[in-house]
Image (cartoon, rainbow, N blue to C red; front, side, top):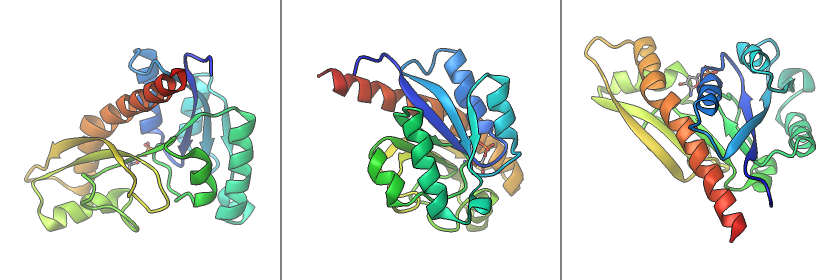
Length: 206
Ligand code: GRF
């Protein structure tokens, strides 16, 4: 492989604040070993697509609901990833669990950001605000975010980076979610992407 940057696809389902953090990190030179060349949404009309457009990044909707489920979604996704020569995939606020059909083809090349310190508050059913509701219910004093490689089990793959965030006495799930995103997710996701891309490039040279 003679490239100096890997092609990165970002998979989204919503507002795309994590996508924005990745785009900003690319502009600021934090991400040097990869380039976001594609954004794929599993839902139409989400703001993440607009963010991609604003930055001239190719964006595609693969409407899981319209296609009738996960299997046809993944068939089309694999085709799109291949056609676009994607090397690394980032799940950024992507609300769908990929099966081994995709994971096997991109082993150690798919990363995800989860809004807790894994192994706390993770796995099936822990997504979005629910993660923060559970952390507050339990009364933990510290939470955070984790970036990990994706395997067949939800939030189970090898951990790449974690960052802790203190919980305040008056936190609501909403205030906590925002602070975890700002202070942890938006920081460690771009850094992790750079680390993963850099490693892949380094290993290819040897
Ligand atoms: C939030 O639930 C965040 O904690 C999780 O993804 C959601 C943000 O989505 N990791 P987006 O990146 O703004 O689309």
